Image 1 (tube, rainbow, N blue to C red):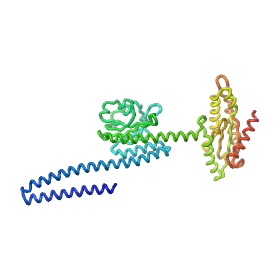
Image 2: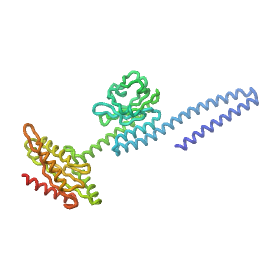
Image 3: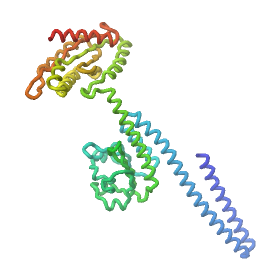
Image 4: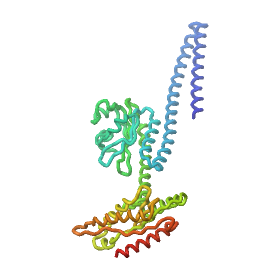
Length: 397
C-alpha cells in the first residue's frame, strides 16, 4: 500500500512539472510570435485548467480511497483484537479501552469518547474514556433517561445514531454550560441479548464531523461487539457453573479436584504438608423429610458458611454433593485443625436454626487426614478421613 501511495504522489508531481513546462513554453512562444499566438495560448491555458480540474477530482477520489483503505485496515485489525480481548481477557475495563482506542484511530477527528455501562439502578457510568478529565469521569453518574441517545430517540434505543447540532438545540441535558460543547456525536447502544448493556459515544466539537457512512461503520462494529459479548457471557456463566456450587457458593467437586492436583504437585515439590477434612451435616435427612427441602437447603447453607470461615486464602473448600463437604488446609497440622474445626462446630451448635415455631440444632461430623503421613493421593486421604468422620457420627449417635 505504501509503495502504491508513493508512486501515485510522484505521478502528481511529474504532471505538475509538465504543466509548468507547457506554460513556460507558451509564454516564450507568445513573446516570440506576438499576439498572433494569443488564441493558441488561451486554448492551452484553458486545456491546462480543465486538466487540473480533472487532476483535482482524481486526487480527491484518491485521498478518499486512501482514507477508506486506512479505515478498513484498522477495522479488520480492531475486529480481531477486540474479539480476542473479549473472549480471553478477564479485565473487562481493558476490553473497553481497547475498543475505544481503535475507534479513535479509525475516527481520528473525535475529540472525546466513552464507553458507558448501565448499572442495575439505571445509571450510566464510565467504563472507559478518552479526552475527559479524571475529575469529570469520577463524578459522572447519569440517568439513562438523561443521556443524548435516549433524548434524541425518545427512549426507543435500537441502533447507532448520528446526533447533530440541530438535535442538541432541541433536547434537554443535565450538563452545565462549559461541561460539553458537542456539535456532532455518534452514539451507539450495546446490547447483550435484549438487555441494554451500555452506550458507546464518539464526540466532536465540530459540526459535520461524521456522516451516514461513519454511523454505518459504528453500527456494524457495534453488532459484532454484541455477538462476542454474548458469547463471553455464556462462556463466563459456564465456567462459573463448573467452578461454583449454586447453593452454597463453595467450589464444585470437579473444580476442587482440579485445584487439589495443583496443591498436591506443589506439596510434593516443596515437601509441604496439608490436612484433608471431610464434613457431613448432621440431621439433614430428618429436616428434608419433615420440614421440606427448602429448610434443608437453609441448613446446608448455614453449615457451608460456617466452614468457609475456617479457611484461609491458601485453603480450598468444596461441596462433594448432598450433605458432604471437603476442604484442604495448607501448611498446617491435624491438631491445629482439630481445635479450629471443633471451635466452629461449637459456635454452630450454640445457634439452632428456627423453622416456623420449631428450632433445629445445627451440627456436623468430620474426619481429618494429613499428607503425607496418612496418604499420598486424594483417594487414600479421603478414604481415611471418611472412616474417621463416620466413627465420630456413630459416637455422637
